[in-house]
Length: 122
Image 1 (cartoon, rainbow, N blue to C red):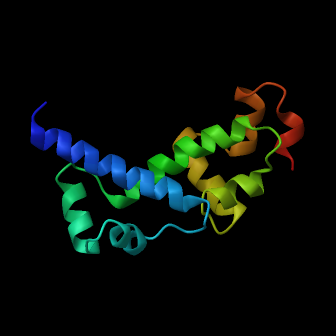
Image 2 (spheres, rainbow, N blue to C red):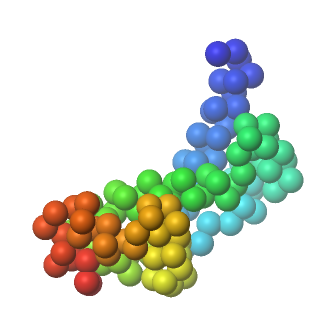
Image 3 (cartoon, helix red, strand yellow):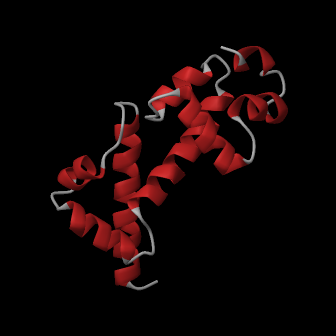
Protein backbone atom coordinates (compact mmCIF):
# COMPACT_ATOMS: atom_id res chain seq x y z
CA UNK A 1 0.00 0.00 0.00
CA UNK A 2 1.55 3.24 -1.16
CA UNK A 3 1.53 6.56 0.68
CA UNK A 4 -1.30 7.91 -1.51
CA UNK A 5 -3.53 4.95 -0.68
CA UNK A 6 -2.74 5.28 3.02
CA UNK A 7 -3.50 8.99 2.95
CA UNK A 8 -6.82 8.34 1.19
CA UNK A 9 -7.79 5.71 3.76
CA UNK A 10 -6.82 8.06 6.56
CA UNK A 11 -9.09 10.72 5.02
CA UNK A 12 -12.16 8.50 4.77
CA UNK A 13 -11.53 7.27 8.34
CA UNK A 14 -11.48 10.89 9.53
CA UNK A 15 -14.73 11.60 7.71
CA UNK A 16 -16.34 8.47 9.19
CA UNK A 17 -15.19 9.49 12.68
CA UNK A 18 -16.64 12.99 12.26
CA UNK A 19 -19.93 11.53 11.04
CA UNK A 20 -20.03 9.19 14.03
CA UNK A 21 -19.27 12.05 16.44
CA UNK A 22 -21.99 14.19 14.90
CA UNK A 23 -24.76 11.58 14.78
CA UNK A 24 -25.94 11.82 18.36
CA UNK A 25 -26.26 15.58 17.99
CA UNK A 26 -28.91 15.17 15.32
CA UNK A 27 -28.77 15.33 11.58
CA UNK A 28 -25.33 15.12 10.05
CA UNK A 29 -24.65 17.58 7.26
CA UNK A 30 -21.87 17.51 4.74
CA UNK A 31 -21.30 21.25 5.27
CA UNK A 32 -20.60 20.75 8.99
CA UNK A 33 -18.21 17.85 8.37
CA UNK A 34 -16.38 19.77 5.62
CA UNK A 35 -16.08 22.76 7.93
CA UNK A 36 -14.56 20.63 10.69
CA UNK A 37 -12.03 19.42 8.12
CA UNK A 38 -11.32 23.04 7.08
CA UNK A 39 -12.39 22.46 3.50
CA UNK A 40 -15.30 23.18 1.20
CA UNK A 41 -18.11 20.73 0.56
CA UNK A 42 -16.84 20.44 -3.02
CA UNK A 43 -13.33 19.47 -1.85
CA UNK A 44 -14.76 16.90 0.56
CA UNK A 45 -16.81 15.35 -2.25
CA UNK A 46 -13.78 15.35 -4.56
CA UNK A 47 -11.48 13.68 -2.01
CA UNK A 48 -14.09 11.01 -1.27
CA UNK A 49 -14.64 10.43 -4.99
CA UNK A 50 -10.92 9.61 -5.28
CA UNK A 51 -11.70 6.64 -3.01
CA UNK A 52 -14.88 5.79 -4.96
CA UNK A 53 -16.94 6.90 -1.96
CA UNK A 54 -19.64 9.45 -1.38
CA UNK A 55 -20.59 11.26 1.79
CA UNK A 56 -23.97 9.55 1.67
CA UNK A 57 -22.25 6.12 1.43
CA UNK A 58 -20.17 6.86 4.53
CA UNK A 59 -23.16 8.24 6.42
CA UNK A 60 -25.15 5.10 5.66
CA UNK A 61 -22.25 2.82 6.64
CA UNK A 62 -21.82 4.57 9.98
CA UNK A 63 -25.56 4.58 10.62
CA UNK A 64 -25.86 0.87 9.78
CA UNK A 65 -22.95 -0.07 12.05
CA UNK A 66 -24.31 2.08 14.89
CA UNK A 67 -27.84 0.71 14.38
CA UNK A 68 -26.60 -2.85 14.81
CA UNK A 69 -24.72 -1.83 17.94
CA UNK A 70 -27.65 0.08 19.45
CA UNK A 71 -30.17 -2.67 18.70
CA UNK A 72 -28.09 -5.06 20.80
CA UNK A 73 -28.61 -2.71 23.76
CA UNK A 74 -32.00 -4.08 24.64
CA UNK A 75 -32.89 -1.22 26.96
CA UNK A 76 -32.92 1.25 24.04
CA UNK A 77 -36.24 1.80 22.33
CA UNK A 78 -36.39 1.85 18.54
CA UNK A 79 -37.38 5.52 18.67
CA UNK A 80 -34.27 6.27 20.73
CA UNK A 81 -32.08 4.36 18.27
CA UNK A 82 -33.59 6.34 15.38
CA UNK A 83 -32.88 9.60 17.20
CA UNK A 84 -29.29 8.60 18.02
CA UNK A 85 -28.73 7.87 14.34
CA UNK A 86 -29.98 11.30 13.27
CA UNK A 87 -33.27 10.19 11.73
CA UNK A 88 -36.14 12.63 12.06
CA UNK A 89 -38.70 9.86 12.54
CA UNK A 90 -38.83 6.20 13.50
CA UNK A 91 -40.44 5.40 10.14
CA UNK A 92 -37.44 6.84 8.25
CA UNK A 93 -35.07 4.73 10.35
CA UNK A 94 -37.22 1.63 9.81
CA UNK A 95 -37.19 2.10 6.02
CA UNK A 96 -33.41 2.62 5.97
CA UNK A 97 -32.80 -0.38 8.23
CA UNK A 98 -34.98 -2.59 6.06
CA UNK A 99 -32.95 -1.48 3.02
CA UNK A 100 -29.70 -2.35 4.82
CA UNK A 101 -30.67 -5.61 6.49
CA UNK A 102 -33.69 -6.88 4.58
CA UNK A 103 -36.06 -6.68 7.55
CA UNK A 104 -37.44 -4.01 9.89
CA UNK A 105 -35.48 -3.27 13.07
CA UNK A 106 -38.09 -4.77 15.44
CA UNK A 107 -38.10 -8.03 13.48
CA UNK A 108 -34.30 -8.04 13.30
CA UNK A 109 -34.07 -7.46 17.03
CA UNK A 110 -36.48 -10.29 17.87
CA UNK A 111 -35.06 -12.81 15.33
CA UNK A 112 -31.36 -12.08 15.47
CA UNK A 113 -31.11 -11.11 19.12
CA UNK A 114 -32.95 -13.78 21.09
CA UNK A 115 -34.64 -12.47 24.21
CA UNK A 116 -35.01 -8.98 22.76
CA UNK A 117 -38.74 -9.27 22.03
CA UNK A 118 -39.73 -7.25 25.07
CA UNK A 119 -37.48 -4.30 24.22
CA UNK A 120 -38.50 -4.24 20.55
CA UNK A 121 -41.88 -2.73 21.31
CA UNK A 122 -40.60 0.24 23.30
